[in-house]
Image (tube, rainbow, N blue to C red):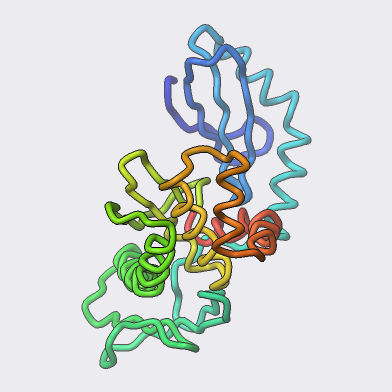
Length: 235
């Protein structure tokens, strides 16, 4: 039972059980209705069952709230409309045109695609390429402004962080940024660039951020309101 999946008692929802080193038991319902119970090694199966039963009403309410308010995980079906880079784009399947992200469409050449997973993989690749194309010029501009010359970049899907920067200046951007407006992408990039000079969130760090974008708080506000919902498209 270390890391396993069960049917939530009385509800039937899929629930993940994850053993952790912490002494506390916690239950989380994510915006995409992923349910995770984290528990220490010494906890018994009976305790876990009773713990879940006691919180079933709260879980049900959260689940139904998420189900009605948050977007479902996308499989990039033909005709699906998605918010990409600040505007709604229609997913278009084709067997003749090149796969690409345009101003109005996400075009997927599905001629050689044999499964839904294959289509999702193709869509993520196209979106990753588009995210990289939009991000790299911004990264170079801000890195030059703060005087950072040694860095690496990476783009991948992350569950909670929108971006990260290591002590070696490896800047990673979340693939889910494709579902955010351009000004939010811009903010996440300059936020991580600022970390190449200030590793924490001190006043010096925020002064650096503000020098790069005096209106950065608008992007922070957008992320706080909409960010978790945007992650639902890929998780």
